[in-house]
Image (cartoon, rainbow, N blue to C red; front, side, top):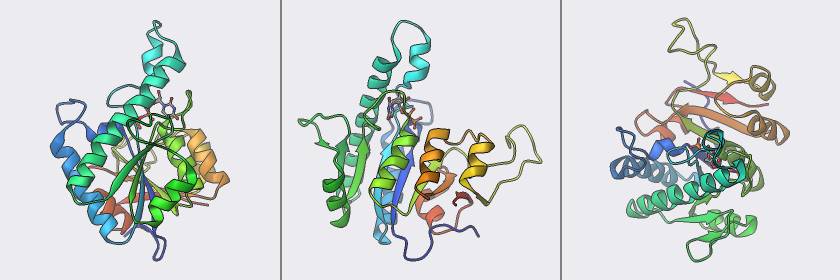
Length: 242
Ligand code: UDP
């Protein structure tokens, strides 16, 4: 089927949107959803893949949207968004620990009484020790998204790929919900992803991936054992690579 993760390439940053933790009825956090996700990640880690994880905060707050209402400025709303990613990371850390995985949250926004502060060398050390590292707080700066944070951390932690596990099983030529003739791309270059203005990831994230020649794999979080299946090439996906 698709490429998945090539043999011998074993450190992956998984980017999950905050919505991946939500209940089917939309409630922001759902224990069973977390347990299912943690089980998938545990199975993936058991295959020898070293995992760094970045979770968004969109199930709670997206700063750009919140600030549009006019009563709060963008940097403050973004700060709240970054805090939301810490809550999500702590929830997934708990679910991973319950699934028998040694996981720890590191936050780019320093809050030492709650979790470790993100720094590159300790994060590399934890990954080398086989721990799953949840990287919270985005980039630590407003006006960015956790997609950009994911690519940034993947580049500095020497990850072989970013897996963006999302609502769709890859990148399509048109919106498959509106256009039945839409086809899924198996592969795209970074240039193609940027010039076609694909909405699946923001341009800043794709540009950073291009600069670092970093592979981005896009697949669906809704498939059974999504992460494991996409990385092993058993689930459809789109690979964006040089
Ligand atoms: N955010 C930020 N800087 C970052 C990453 C995130 O300010 O480096 C804020 C921003 O407000 C964003 C929110 O955190 O909307 C949640 O992240 P994101 O929208 O990427 O979450 P997702 O859509 O992946 O759930």
